[in-house]
Length: 180
Image (cartoon, rainbow, N blue to C red):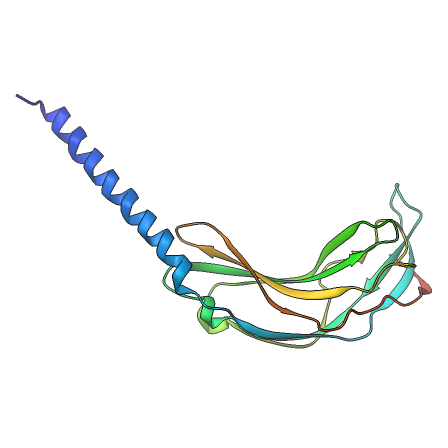
């Protein structure tokens, strides 16, 4: 009647269908498991320096330095389908040409629920915060947001915002020149 090869083919097709159904159920259930994390972001006054760059495209480019305080409880985001969290502090502002910019100034990867409590005082930007148009002069004040990206074992990535500064932080005039 049926050969051994056709029986193996039917069994493997049935098992793969069951596996795909199980994975789809896991991915759909992940949307209902997590709850909203809580947190606060505080920004000290920003310092801006007129830096001399050695880049071929620009002779001068302002650099901003940000000190921040972050407190967040990310434990509600961890459940059985959470692989890791990517947390970032972003500055959002509009430059003098009217272009909306979002710059990541600090980030962290959290892999365990035990490490999901963030308490950072006096943190400094991890990445260079430079204005592409070379100057922070006439740039609108920036708002700062603590955001997350939940990476599940199965399913789609989930994005969200944990906290945002209540007031926008202005950029002061550039200070002394600093070599980069």
